[in-house]
Length: 401
Image (cartoon, rainbow, N blue to C red):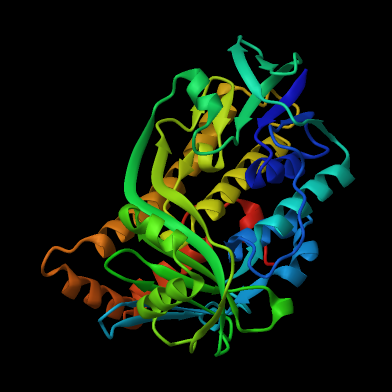
């Protein structure tokens, strides 16, 4: 019998396995082999804010990531065809960086290596969940290799289309934005100087983030939100044509784009589980909420889910009790609900505001950007939310990095 069975060994599931190491008997069920890969200048990255850096440091993995993490020292937000700009700088919060752009490969590898080094998690990998049956005191999980796992608590960290959620018959609110994110990397003729840019266009935002410190300060991750009907054209066109189109959308704040990496695309949807918990089950990360990447909040929100679970189950008040007890699940839901709702609604409203072509809204968007840049109260609220401190943050997120 395990205390906790984590279904899903991606970034969120692996983070939780590390966070619970040594305090709980943990099993990790993951369908894919352990992550492997080599560093590439155009590999996919993920932006982690300051609170997430604090959490990763508490998990003992940040030191291994720091050399590959590109610091984001400022942000620049604008709208195509308008002069209003919102700027934020780490110095406003007394920090060296607002966050970092980290290769997903490096983050996954660091978490798995840390988990293996601690040696307290039972790995069931590769293995897929086939069914689960709950009783009063445990959950029995049947895997596709014939093994049966019993645990007092199941944490579903199994992604946007969570098999656990499906098996339990729990609904999710789905909103298809009719967009896909094209993710690649570009080389620029001007230095990014640690600034992350987001430019809103009629078809969706285009973002450039500093990346790959080893490659100098002229390499950026590029994330281009694209209407579904234009996706095939942008994926299949030549590098020169893609660069020209991206340059026209972004402008020349970083000079000319001089090189392009491999292009990948993902459909963009908002998927919100109707429940954060069920008897002896809780949802974390994309299994709880999957968001549009416009504000780069999804993984950061999921990491705060992880830190909250670890804080609860490692609390002396709970560590010797039943981790799947109703009181534990209710406390998790109560702690996460406000942060989750605020970030999900903020992201959704941002997408809708900057995707809407109703006459008059462009002026309102312009005024909004000016307010972000000039109004101290608005600036401070948005800055602290983007740092990951907008609600009741778990203790690990409040520990200085």
